[in-house]
Image (tube, rainbow, N blue to C red; front, side):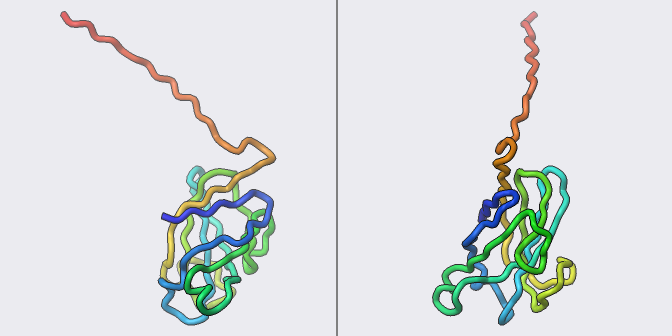
Amino acid sequence: MSQIKLKKGEETENVALTLTEKTTISSPSYLFEFTSDSTKQANTCICADLSIEGAQRDRANLFNITEGVDDRLNSSLILFNAGRYHYTIREQESTTNLDPDLSGDIIERGIMLLADFETSQYLQHEINVIYTVHEPI
């Protein structure tokens, strides 16, 4: 499973994914959907493939994704809290559709980690364990 790492409030350049080999339409637009593991809220954006057509694109597709700017048709979106997200990438012919139900086939699924360096990077949970001892009779 692939993994994307983004920084909250920043542009992440050269996110490399292998989408071309699974894409079935010519000149696709890629619809990215990010769903928070903690809140289950989802947000989408269309990301432009910046890789050069030909051998480079056959090897890897490159994307710049900006978190913290609401321009969902241009590789930018506002997500929720820092943490772990699941992502789904769909192919589509439309350059303006942001609805996953109206898009094409799913090309890739994976995990995205959204880091926030302004606050704590990691969430820590305390677990209370209670042990019960049973003595033989």
